[in-house]
Length: 375
Image (cartoon, rainbow, N blue to C red; front, side, top):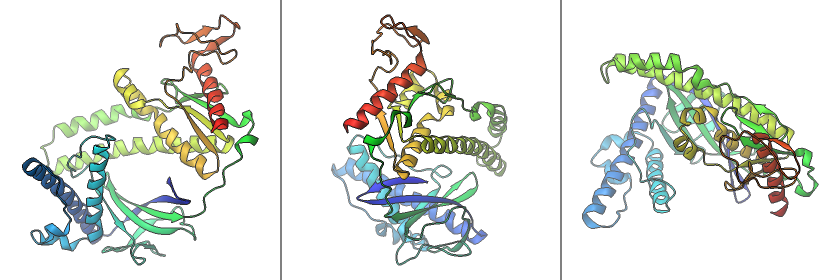
């Protein structure tokens, strides 16, 4: 479940596994294809117009329905959301927040989003009512609250399985705790560790199960078989589905573990502090790509942030240039001679012997708590 805050309101997304019938699957796949087509065609036309004229052009899905009448067979709001996604991608590019928009591919971008108009999306006893599809069976493991209003839904296809994410709006914003009454015992500092998932300010080293590394043998075997199949043949598609399911299982195992860890952290502590490190850059420059991705610390930070917000608690990001490993957490002495290979060191001022990661977690805790009280 994800969370966003918007002027006193909250947007939550509930994700359910759905089981569409054969006809519903055909319509879902067709709608996904039409959404991809509109996105790619509008992107291509806008690029061409800019190259020829030197300015942008305003386009809508309705401009293509006369030339391609099969677009009228699917949900029109799915096509409108494809247009909005392209507009957001352009805006993010011009604001230098992301790269230039790329074309969507089948098998990678298999999803579409629609909106609820006049209660067109609603939960029923038998499933979820969707525009054009009717009632689709779902596994509703978590009920939607009485005071939550459905705003839209996204249907996605991952490794041959279908999911629906229901976006709801609610007003039950949790009351934040009084930060001045929080004791330091309820504050936790987390330091990223490549060998572990994290090391906290209590000295606890949380080990992760390295799901990707443990599944590499099976994954390599499946990928070798895939490489020997004729491209885009039926056997190729069957083997590709097996590879995708292995990847999906690895991701699900990691997410399940991170959800449990983040839930425990936010239950036990009122303030969680962590360093704002760039994990994507770390993957590239330190040759730790697989290990950093398998670690999942970035996902853990996201989970802790929204779960703490749901519980009225705080998360604090300490700046990436804060010298957490070089400072002595006892006396504040800064040791400038520490390198990446230095795992332990002794403070020449107070004589305290430090473990690098535990010392960094303690400094992150102290700095995060200070930043919280100043905010």
